[in-house]
Length: 115
Image (tube, rainbow, N blue to C red):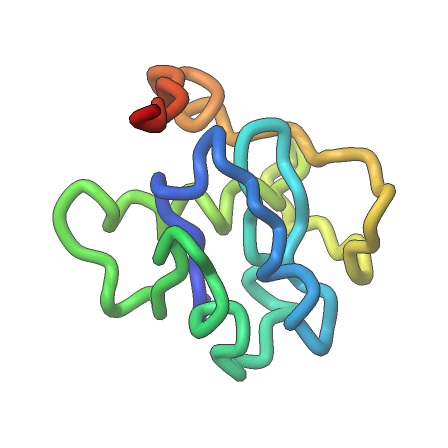
């Protein structure tokens, strides 16, 4: 899988990445976005526009973020373990079910702004 979305997206879901994707391979989950492993064409547009720096090429994911290579791929597997090919995301689509590790991830606390 060429590009993945890491934990920095959990509970942020800015979504600007979806506007730059020419093949609509970035899908909204319940708590984060996921990049479909076979639909992505490796253009890197999403990586350059992500405001929280959550998008990486899979070989750049290290440490705790390395598991997101697997998480992004598994988010698109059906009950039989086969990859689901939904054919592209669009605004208004029903969010896909989060990967169990993302669903169990500790909730991100909202940032407070100094007044």
